[in-house]
Structures are given as C-alpha cells and as structure tokens.
Image 1 (cartoon, rainbow, N blue to C red):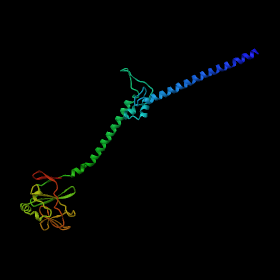
Image 2: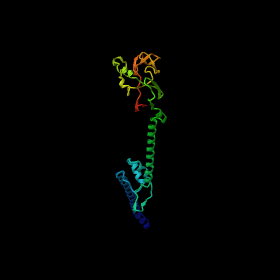
Image 3: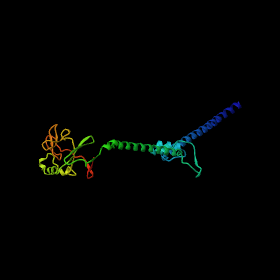
Length: 267
C-alpha cells in the first residue's frame, strides 16, 4: 500500500519534468531555426543593398556582379576578366594584381591585331577603287599625240589618228584666214569666231567626224571648198564651221597645245 501511494505521488512530478524538458528542447530548436532564418534573410538583404559594379576579391564574383547589374564594359575589360580563383602578385612592386585582369595583355593584343586587320582591309579597298578609276598605262600612252608641223606645207591638209579618231590639220593660207575672219556670226548655225577655234591662225586642228551621224568628211569639196560629208550633205567652211546640211554643230576642236612654234601635242 505504501509503495503504491509513493508511485502515484511520483508519476505526476515525472510527467511535469518530462514535459518541461521537452519544452525547453523544442524552444531551443525553434530559437535556433529562427536565428538561422533571420541570418539568411539579413545576408540576402545585404547582398541586395550592395552597390552593383563594386568588384570583390575574385574575378568570378566581379563578372557575376557585372552580369546581374548589366553594367556596360569595354570589350577589352570583358575579354580580360576571366573567372579565376588564383591570386597573383607583382613580384617587382610587391603588390597584388587586380582580380580578373590576368588576361588583359592578351586582350589588348587580340583587339589591336583585329583593328590592324580592319585598317589594312580598308586601305586595300580604297587602293583598289582608286587604281580601278585610273587609266591604264597603254591608255595613257595613246591619250596624247605629238605632231610635227614643220613638214606641213601652206595650203596642205594632213590627217593624223588620235584616240582612234581622225584629226584634220590644215595649214591655211592668208586668204583662207581672212575669209574665215570676215564671216558674220548671223550666217552661222553654230556661231563661233575663227580666232576662238585656232590658237595659231596658220594651223587649224579639228576632229574629222561629222557632227550629224559620225561620218568622216572629205576635204576640197562642197559649196565652201573645204570639208564636205557625202553621207548626208553637210558643208563646212575652212574654219570647220557648219554652213549647210543637217549637221547641228561645228567640227570639234580637240584640246591641244604648242610645245614649240612648229610642234603641237594633242590631248
């Protein structure tokens, strides 16, 4: 009986002690969990509040921060910032290299080499265009023609070939020069003075192609005893000016200059 009473008396006390012990353990676990949770939240808040673009100790963190913040970097910086865990030192200055700049010399080399290739390609393209616009050497050789006039007698007409075209050179007499100068401008279809068509009045230089349809006139024929185009009947006077017929313009005077008194260069 006494033993039964003692057990009945101790059981409620043991139950209360067990409940208190379990409660303290549960409270401790709950406090620890709350502390960890608050710590992770505080750390996350600090990461959010940390300014974007401030590089930390390693290049991997720096590149990650740049990508998240979308900060604009130059191609050299982006190429040179290789993620790495290595820490390197400048043995000469006893200083640590900035993180992520180990590949910067190579980046400069690659970028400079690329720009040099671009510049070379642009220079080559410009040279190709300029050279393609320039005349070839054989074309330049036939672009000008030197003619010696000392062998052309007065009253004589010679024909030379310049750029594939016939050129008439007439050594005019004094009567022909005077006759050309006396013509009134009102009588001409394409008004042009004789002094404007001949540098030296003694020698007339004209391209021997009719201005109507490109035929070659003949000399010593027509109504003016000068050049006549038998194809369609165009008459030119001794100054090469159109007087009758369908041709609309005078015979063309090519560009020429006197080298000496008896020598000219056409073209």
